[in-house]
Every structure is written in structure tokens, then in C-alpha cells.
Image (tube, rainbow, N blue to C red; front, top):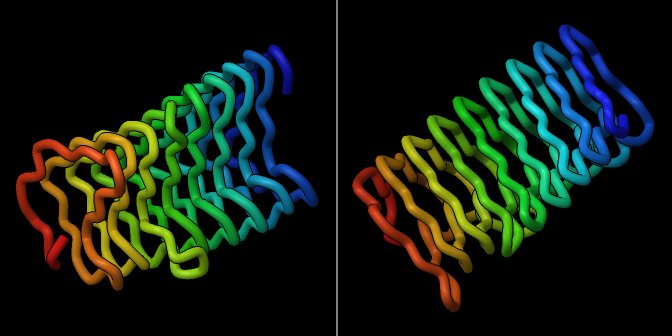
Length: 199
């Protein structure tokens, strides 16, 4: 969809390519949908799009679950993103993505990947069993992230940050290669409690 508005509600979406694609200053609301089995990202969002995703299941994609690029803003609430052969959520340059009460489960690569000028806000979300295929963390941060009250467990690695991250009240445990890794110029602030293994 280009320069329009999309509303999908209670829809099952299976396609050979993108499940849903929003482009070029579009706006969209996706709610109560089942989006799966697509060859490119299950949900592709590009070019200054504003989108919201509510109570949906995005799963079993050959690429990313949600790929956000080129200055877009996306809010995902109470949704499950699982079993992708690539990243669950990819946050591109100059994008802002927020996850609230989401479940990011069993993805081959990172649960969330944030590019150098990307921003992520993760609240009350669960990241489990991610990153084993690509030897990546549940949350890979090159840009900036705020992580509040999330559960991060049984991933290849918990959080790896090259960028800056603020964390608060995390439950991080059982990750194969550590809870928290800062790389090169990575910075962290306000880690309060709940690390179940050494960082």
C-alpha cells in the first residue's frame, strides 16, 4: 500500500512474498490477525510509514517477522512474533519501534535488531529461545534502546549492545552466552535487578 490507509482485522494472511507491505507515507492498523508462511518479511514497513499492530500472531516466515525501514514508526502491542528464519523484528535507520506486552519466541536470528540510527522501546515483553542459528543475542542494539520490565531467557545471548541502552527491572536468565554484553562503544544505564547470570 502506498500513501493510503490500511486496516486489517481478524484476518489470516498467507502469501508467497510479503504478507503485508506498507510503503511511502502510508498509515496502517493491523489487529487480531494471523500472518504466516511468507517468503519475504511477514510484515514489511518502509518509507515514513506510521503503523500499529495489536493482538496479532506473526509466525513461520522465511525472512523477518516485521521489517521496519526508512524513517518509519511502529507500535506493536500484545502480539506474538515467532519461528522466523531471520530476525523477529528488524529496526532500520531513523526508525522508532516500540513493543508492549509482546512475545518474541524461537527465531533463528535476533529477537530484535536495531540499526545504528534506529530506536527501540521494549516494555513488559518476553524474549525466549532466539538467536541460536545466527549466534546473536535476543536483543542486538547498534542504535538506542530502552528496555523495561522484560523477561529475557534461554536465548543464545541476552542483550548485546554496540549502541546505548537503558534497562530497568529485567528478568534475564538461562541465556547460553551471558546476560549482557557491551561491545566497543556500547553504553548502559540504570540496570536495577534480576540478572540471573553473570554479565
